[in-house]
Length: 484
Ligand SMILES: *Cc1c(COP(=O)(O)O)cnc(C)c1O
Image (cartoon, rainbow, N blue to C red; front, top):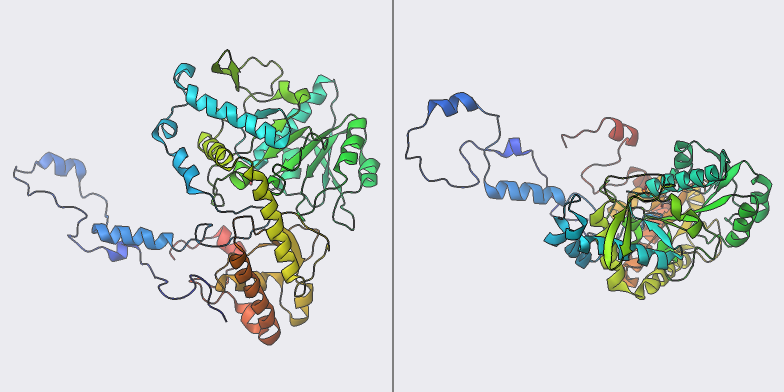
């Protein structure tokens, strides 16, 4: 086995700080006490909590070691399909931590917040240009909240026409948040099966679309990594029946600078700034899921809206048809700065980034197709989906392959999603991996497939090099053992 990065040596064990402490040890030296101690202090403080006595180096090493137990895009390749775990340039972090931005208070009067408002206004304009949809709200805090906002916009639009439509069409390949957001807004989701080519067929949409249906939610490119090539025709069908088209734009990383969403008939789209536009994600930190809409839906956008009037930036609440606020203040500003900095520093290279993301995914697909079953055999966008069909003969499954990748120093890809593909392995390499990194990943998978034939027992036990081996995942989530 070729040794993977970071999989050997110096994997340090770490006791609790309580076990490490030694009476009298200190992180700093105070001068000797030259005044009598007051009994009052002792009375007030009593015995005090039983904190361990530690030196500075004890504490620094403890937390630094713990930090190495985590895996992130800064430590290695993270090909988690649908999540776009790409490397985020550090300059964008730096801009977000500039004191004037990081410490700006949301209650500052607008005269004192012109710079922050300009960033928000300009970011809206850039996102409008990238998507082709002219009006933008930066408020939603995540993709899922962007979807909910989009559904509220659908509802408001139909109510304006005095219609209370009750259903939403959602493809069977959709991310779970799509039907959840529709349901939260009171809509009933109606699944649309994708066809044998992995995309939506206009006839299937036509058969389900009626005047009680508020519209359709389409992810494009979809979660099979395939472009919905009939989207224009599908949009026409939906619009003819008075419905609206929502695009889940979480996969925008595949099409920046190449696809104008308005031309495809999209009315509302959310972006994931924390996937496509340079915010690290994965640990549940703050995100941002702006919604971009056509002129027709602009009056319903959340307030306040950032406006540019007579050379001044303002916050306007003057939109009587607005659905109201969806986030405190103006959304997660720190994430917006990272996206703004990313877009400005990339310029027209955004298009190149998308082209490279697509090239890398197709390179993986072509390099692995002789060892893994490829359910949809055609050029992919930013991700490719394989299955474990060929490995089942050795009683080795997708889960075993994913776990074994950890021993080779790679984060596993997304597995068992999308649900329409049995035993799915969904890989998204992103544009930020070099050919050498991709080749190492391909080589690791080739060796794992060979191991599946020669030594399937080993795979069933993987990972074997990690601190903790294979977990009972349900128990690990429900009753986490935090004692290490
Ligand atoms: C990530 C993702 C979402 C949800 O975004 P969150 O920011 O996690 O709420 C929705 N749809 C697709 C296709 C995604 O990949």
